[in-house]
Length: 584
Figure 1 (cartoon, helix red, strand yellow):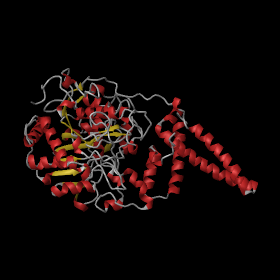
Figure 2 (cartoon, rainbow, N blue to C red):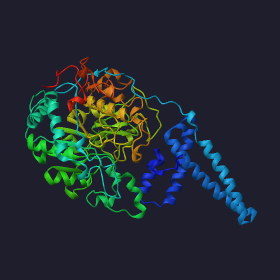
Figure 3 (cartoon, rainbow, N blue to C red):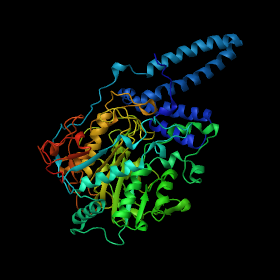
Figure 4 (tube, rainbow, N blue to C red):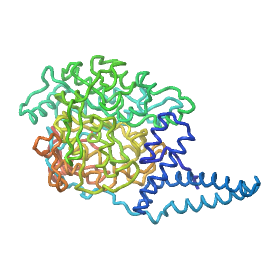
């Protein structure tokens, strides 16, 4: 039987956040052990005593052995000291004391470790069945989501991130830029029905401006574009000396830093899909470099991305909230809050690069998330809020804390994603939604990618790009892919496979239901993130596919007005309705 040892890297919730802070500050291990032991003990007691069933939560199962080890340590020290003073013999102190402490430790572990048959059943999967569209489809071809897959996009021999060899998913030898560029170009043509990239982008701009300004016009000189990328972990993975070195990962680590390598590198935006977007905007759509800003406002741009983009496009503005060093352009917060959460709890400022943009392009990654269930284009907006982190918004997720505490599952709950999708500065100012799925994320969003098993991936990298003009439809498709892959039954690469079920937690798609129809809003909630007195309109269409093999939606089947998933190559998703609606 495999030895199950406690792994401090898997500690979740409050103790996990304290561990991360202590490690970033390079606090000695003895101090970390003491602080984490106290935190785990207090956290376990205040959570479990009011509600004993919480002892079965995954986060509690992780904290329990750490707590028991700490308490056992205290008992051992105290007991051995007392015995030593009383018995006055070293032999009896060690032999008797060790036996007593071992027995106490066994009893304690048995007391705090719940039996498997005591774990309450957690409801899984969405409430609505296949091919039951909700809402109103958006897009030049309504409800269309384009999925481009090409196994030649990445290096199949690459297994996972490896600091020892300095080999990463974003490394040049693990990507094929020519294939990736063609994948995106083919995708934008199928999304719009045009025959070249210039016409395709013109159609995208015209569709956006018709809906926002009631003017069917393309890009106009002087208009600003902000490309929001997904770099949410760089702010803590990179320590100050890394940031002072151009925001690159370090090539060497001191002995007391080596544990940092466990988080090198999370699944985030790589260089090459973004590079193709820049090429098409600048070379095909005619947007001047200086009118394009790119970044993740809350976090710095990775050095490995900047060097690829800036080499070809040095006049694009690569944003940072703290510095103008290393070619970065400084951004600043609005003076007053401009984002108002509809449960009336709080509000947020945004950055000038967002509120001054005429268009936002939302680019993110295909990945699971330990709190939200999934992390796609809606979740990516967390990086736009004007705070050091977006932790103040986690309460609206199905799992309030990392790795557990499933007390907010189900439907018709307040979901902050709807406010973000409905904001006039964020979701309603978005030109196009793009999900990079070349390297699909693992179970945890703070660690690297893993190979996927579902067809057509078949234990290779996911090698995919998704795009849409319907923000709800692309979330729905991404959700179906992730819940099929992370079904709690597969066994992915152990580098990132802790808890393989989060996308399937009941209610993960609640925000999609609500974004698709006000009829699904919680009682007493009127989504109005602009504080304008005008509720958020229907933002798109939500639907689940018929099954993970055929991947067909109602427009593919010709049975409804929901989603159409267009695949490249075409045989991946067959269109029973023939070529109707395919722009051919």
